[in-house]
Every structure is written in structure tokens, then in C-alpha cells.
Length: 257
Image (cartoon, rainbow, N blue to C red; front, side, top):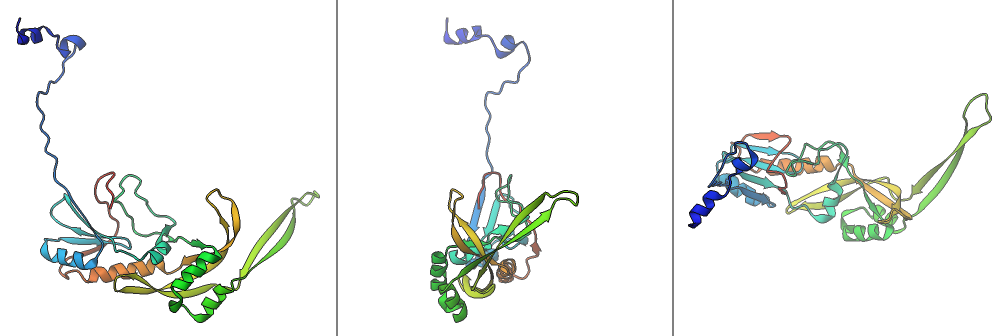
């Protein structure tokens, strides 16, 4: 008995399962090629926009995207922001994080998240940028003082009962100015005045244990600074390309830009 004859004796899936099946002997799948370009220098984006057919620009405070006729080419620009400034631009509030599409970035909706500093870390940060702040602010941070006050309040739970609740309100006062400005570099050839709001906070370690008081800085003009910077970048692209400010959904699941 030849090998082919032996194969003929092997029952088919239809005979085994008793139902009709589709048999595919050869299936050739040709995936579409995809090109992801993640650019960090505006000069590169400008040169590229002049040498390819761009039909639109979508931008917001975080990214710029060049739209082309090729649906499999994604051209993304995210500026290389200096680390000392970048940490103050993390989003806080109502914004979509891209749970399904990692490449998704909504229009900014919220404030910049605050950054907490111990006195030592804050002094190091100020030392690096001492030429960019006022002498008054620098001296206040060098001699940073935090005063704690407590106020006790008692409130009757009802008019016909002696039961009451006691609340203790803690307040912290520091000699550091409530608001101050630092002129900081953001990206190559780009700098801006960052306006900070300072607040005393309880510092905690990775195990949520208290480790003393610190200062929390929030960049209160961060959204406007980022928008101005990106708008300036968009203005450097060819004038004949339509501009659109809004949300982006780019790439496929698990893609990162």
C-alpha cells in the first residue's frame, strides 16, 4: 500500500465531526507595510513636510501629526522637552489616557499635576536655576521655614443631645512666596516663564509612610506655555497646509509613540 493510499484511509474532519467544514490548503496573507516616524526636532519635521504630500496638520499641546494620503504612514512630532521643565507638564484632571489606543491623546482638559520637593531636593533644583529666579525667592528657599498651626472646633450633633464632634484643622505656613516665576529652557531655542504656586505638603515614601514636610510646586500656566510652544512649531510648517486643533487617534493597539 502506497503512502497516498494510506492517507486515503484516514477519516476526514467531516467524517469525524459529522458536519461540513471548510478546508484551506494554502492561505497567503500579505500584511500592509507600515511606517511610524516619531520625530523630536522641529527642523526635521519642517524638512519632511516640504518633501512629502501633506494634506493636513492635527495638533494639540502634546503632539503634532502630519496627515498624508498614505494611511499606513504615521508622522508624529513630540518636542524633546528639557527634563527639569517636563516634570511640571504632567496632566492632572479629566483627560483620556488611551486605555484602548496607546497612540490616542485628547485635547488637554485639566491642570498640570503638582511636583513635591523635599527641602534638599528643592534647594538642588533652585541651585541649578538660580540665575533664572529672583534673589528674594532664592534666599527664602535657602532659609525655608514651615510653621504648623492647629485649630480645634467642636460641633454639637443635635440640639437635644450633648453629643458633639471635634475636628482639628492643621495649617502650614512657609516663608517661601506663594507664587513665583522661573524662566526656564523648554526645548532647543525655546524658553518660557513658568509661574509656580507653592504649597506645604506632607511628604511620604514609597510605602506611604510620612517623612516630614515638603513643598509642592504646581505650574499654573503650564497648559498655556505648552500650547504657545506647539503653536509656534506649527507656524513654522508650510503655510498652504490646513491646520486642525483637536484630538488624535494614531496607530494600532500596543503601538507606542
